[in-house]
Length: 112
Figure (spheres, rainbow, N blue to C red):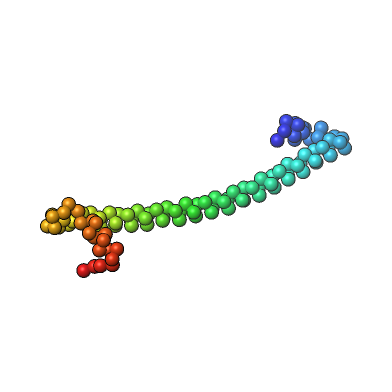
């Protein structure tokens, strides 16, 4: 809001409504302020809608992150079980790791 607008709105009633020109000026400024207010209301509604959408997206992403975290923890447990049993068995076959043998068998579709 400009200083002129503030000045006009802040005028005493008698001064603001004392002449035809001051009444017209006051009315024009009131209309401008009304239009600006309506525009701002529309912007606020749009921002509220955007905020709702962003909140839903955030919640969805957080839920997905939790699912992925749980999946990761499950895979980590599988890997730990494999490593726990792999070391003694690899020694039985005279190798340090069974990974390449397992990978080769998996690529051929073999499973016992």
